[in-house]
Length: 63
Image 1 (cartoon, rainbow, N blue to C red):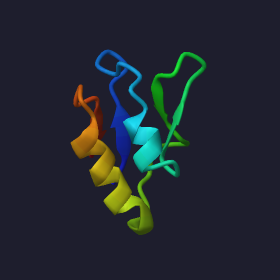
Image 2 (cartoon, rainbow, N blue to C red):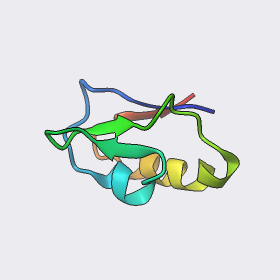
Image 3 (tube, rainbow, N blue to C red):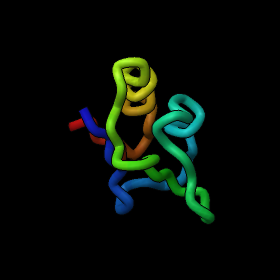
């Protein structure tokens, strides 16, 4: 599974980073970014799903 953030939908709330800091970070302007290539390890699957469920703009995709 891989995580992706749609930069057109992200509004920079930072919930992804708060809920899954091993998968997401913020750019210089506070918008979410995926760390590395977005691969979600088994240990990060639950935090990734929490981040997806809590993104107000639905900017996160898990593929």
